Length: 252
Ligand SMILES: C[S@@+](CC[C@H](N)C(=O)[O-])C[C@H]1O[C@@H](n2cnc3c(N)ncnc32)[C@H](O)[C@@H]1O
Image (cartoon, rainbow, N blue to C red; front, side, top):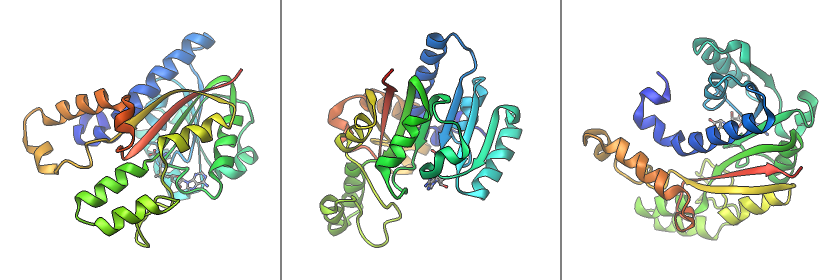
């Protein structure tokens, strides 16, 4: 079932998807080409790659996980876009061993910077894969959202630890190696020859609301989606978002 048919699942992707779709439309108009070349670094099983291919674009997914690439292939085939999705085993640090430098109209780097050895190099490589004026879509875990979530779950010491830890981790059991503030993410991007266009907070409320309220109240998912969308661009909410999305343009 696609995310569009599973409203609860769409809470995870809706804000990013809307921003990304607009950015791709913008590149289509600017380049005069209907089909763009899109690179999804750490694209995994194709949460974004497959919907992007369904828009008619050619997507290359680079990911180190053979299992993820296998699932991607199956998902692309099921969606009828196998001819527009290419999965390549590789790493953002050795990106140009497997893809062309300066060959893409848009580069996605979603949920990857948290895990890589050298995030600054990861961003530099993502940007180096772009053509001039190409679009960079960067999504990473937000520090404040994790602090808030731990505190609301009653884990006050862990919340405090995440707040104090330079990597934003709440403890040994934390599965996420690194989290970011909006300032840290935008500095990473600006330092890599990219003009920051917009910053959005993602999953500001969705992870804090008890599931039962969303699943049982008629119209609740739709109302929550609208609330997420309205708050996403407001800087005041960036500091409590579970994820942060930065959209940028490579300087020409
Ligand atoms: C949280 S998943 C995100 C998947 C996808 N981008 C999405 O938004 O649904 C993180 C992905 O990053 C990949 N990954 C981990 N280390 C990486 C690296 N050094 N270079 C590229 N991808 C990496 C993982 O294999 C995994 O598929």
